[in-house]
Each structure stands twice: as structure tokens, then as C-alpha cells.
Length: 392
Ligand SMILES: *Cc1c(COP(=O)(O)O)cnc(C)c1O
Image 1 (tube, rainbow, N blue to C red):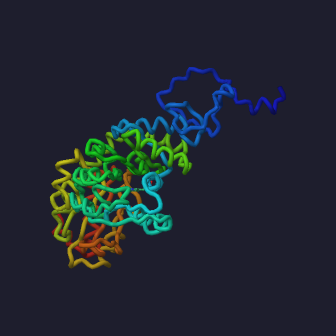
Image 2: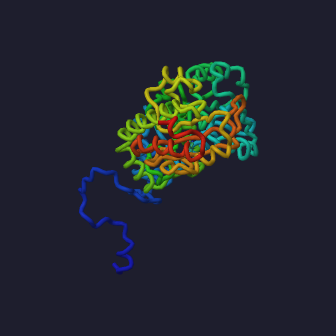
Image 3: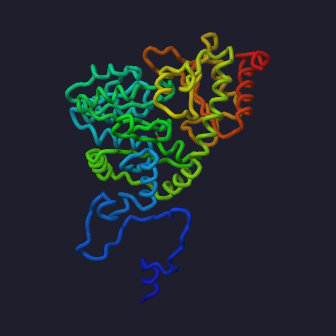
């Protein structure tokens, strides 16, 4: 063989039998078949064997199987991000003329998709109060194809009565999807509570180090497996094996990180609750959070993201000065990594909630909680919101 032919030969020359503890990064678009009769093009890799890299390399499939195990799902599809997972759920369940229901506490870009892309496609998305519970039945129409839930909700943290919503939706033949990113699929058992599709942004806790973007869509029934799977293949939502490999590494420490984040976050939230300048702490494990009783009933833990609402006497300028004075809490989107983060929401639009300009979302990281509390205390003093003596 010419040396140029040798160079591109796909044969593996290294000896086999390397048994690493770690799932290898399998990069590949083309999958080789042994003979012409064997050729198939099917996204159902578990049934037909591997056919094409877009439907999942072994690295992506390994991550999917482990997410499915964690969420006690039949199957988890791995997609390029949490927002891609949301889009996949809509496109698997809805078409022109469909109606879908979304809580006003849903992740912002979920609602933006409803106002833009989905509207253009003839899909009508109606916003509902996350605390509606069994009242959801009154909003379901003959063309309702999907009810979204997200619990606790983004930013305002309302805990939803998911079992009550599921009961009403299922009585009318409508599937329920859950954005389960907050619990990493760990502290709320979506399928035991009747949910049909559970998605999460693996970008957050599973990745855990702010260095990747991935999402998962988990299903439990054969019908949903087929419906989501064919949309997944049609949309070409394959994920990078390098990112999947990082997420598999993130899974190794997910248990430890979640445990530590829960206790640190509760320490910080409880300290904030005692401060005179804070009107409300929106953390599901505290009674001041809307739906706290439902959290106690349905959840087995809390994670790292929560919000505080300053007293009405605190101006929007003081809130910004407080955020700017923080040293350990950095200003940035996303959460669930190792670093503490803070985010203002000056234009937050929520019916029946008067948080405008006074709500701040915090994400607690793996720093020592006493350092984080000291940081919050000095920032309150620097922003002249609260005397350091009062805080001490
Ligand atoms: C971050 C987030 C998403 C989107 O995830 P990306 O990977 O950033 O696209 C979806 N839902 C919730 C609740 C999130 O916090």
C-alpha cells in the first residue's frame, strides 16, 4: 500500500484490551458496516446497533443511559443544550394549530420561543400561574398538546403541584413535561409523580464546572420514546462526544457536590432571612417560598439557586450597588458550577408579584459558606443598605 493510503486506513494498529475506568471519547460521524445487507439508517441504536454518529456515539449513549438511570427513565436523549431540549419537547408534542400551557415562572428563553418561533409555526402558547394546581384543568382545550411545568420556577422559585397538574392533564389525554434542571433529576422523581417527559440542562449540575453546554430529554413510555426520538433524529440534535465526556466526569462528583451545595446554600439563605434589609427569601426549603408545603411533600432535597427580595425601602440603585460590591459572587448567567454567582432582574415581569427591581438571584458555589456570608455582609454595608453592626 502507498504510504498515503496507509495513513488514512481506518484499521486500529494499537493493541486492544486497554481497560480504562473512564468511558472513551468516541468521535465519529461514519459508522462502519460489515456488509451491504447490514446497512440500516435508524436512530434506535439500542435495537439496531450504531448506524450514524449524529444519533449518538458510545460516549453520548453512555451519558444518556446514566441520566436515564438517575431519573429512573426508560431512555434519555442527549442534546446540545438545555434550550435545545426545550425546543425538542415542543416539536415532539406540538404542530400547527396546537395549544400549549407554560407557567409564567418558566425559564425565560422557553417563553421567548413561545412568542417568536412557535407563534410563527402556528403553535399557541398560553401562560398560566405556576400555583394554579388542579385549576389547570380549566385551561386545557381540545387542541392542547402539552402542559409544561418547572418546579421550582426560574427566578421566582414557585413550587408547583405537579401531581395535581398531571392528574388534570392526563384525564384529558394531555402529556406533561417538566423542566427538572433545579433538582438535577435527583431531588424530584419526575416519573413517580406522573410526568411524561423530564428535561434538564446538563449545563448546570451534571456538567458542574461551567465549561460545557448539554441537555437531556428523558421519557418513560414507548409512545414518548418514539415521538421524541423521531423529532430528535429529524432535527439532527447530536451532541459533541467531548462535552459528553466532560458531563460523564461531572457525574462522578454530582453526589458530593449536591450534598455540599444543599448545606452551604441553606446556611447562606437562612443568614439572609435574618437580615433586616431582606423582605423575603425565595428558597423552597424556607416557609417564605410560595409552594414550600409542596416542596416538603414531593422533594427530597434542595440545591444551590435561590432569590432574595429586598425591603421596599431599598432602592433599585442600592440593589445594583450591592451587586457591584460583591467580590465572591460574580455577575453572570447560568448556575450549578463551582463558583457563586449573582444576577439582577430589574425588568422581571410576573403577574401578581411586586418584586420589581428588588429581586436578586444567587447561586451558591463550593466556596466556604462563611466567606460567602462575609461577602454579602460587606456588600450590604458598602451599598449603605444595612449597617455592618446590625448584620453581625
Ligand atoms: C439554564 C437553563 C436551561 C437552558 O440550558 P442551556 O444549556 O443553557 O441551554 C433550561 N432550563 C432551566 C431551568 C435553566 O436554568
